[in-house]
Image (cartoon, rainbow, N blue to C red; front, side, top):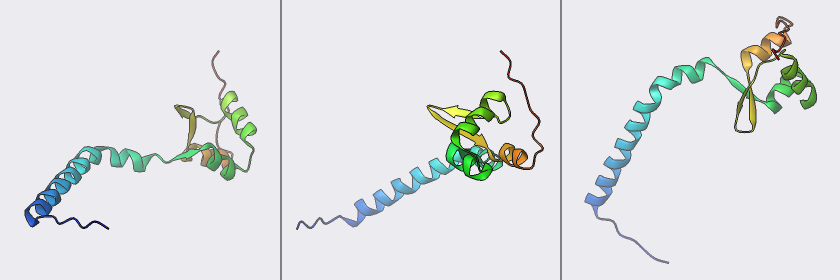
Length: 98
């Protein structure tokens, strides 16, 4: 086993650096927190569970324009608010433009 001894000045400097990085991250992410909280996103599995439908049915909803989605890389996300509207039967059927 190896024991490493750190000088107290080095430890304090490291603590200051970590604190500065933490403040920078907080400063950078603050404008996006409201947006993140305003829109809740569900992945495909979560949407299927809420709607009690299969993945194929969910894909049909997307294809027919019944439920909007956003795709990031190869993963599909759905707005919770839209899924809730569909669950309540308030979501109007939209035709996709070809």
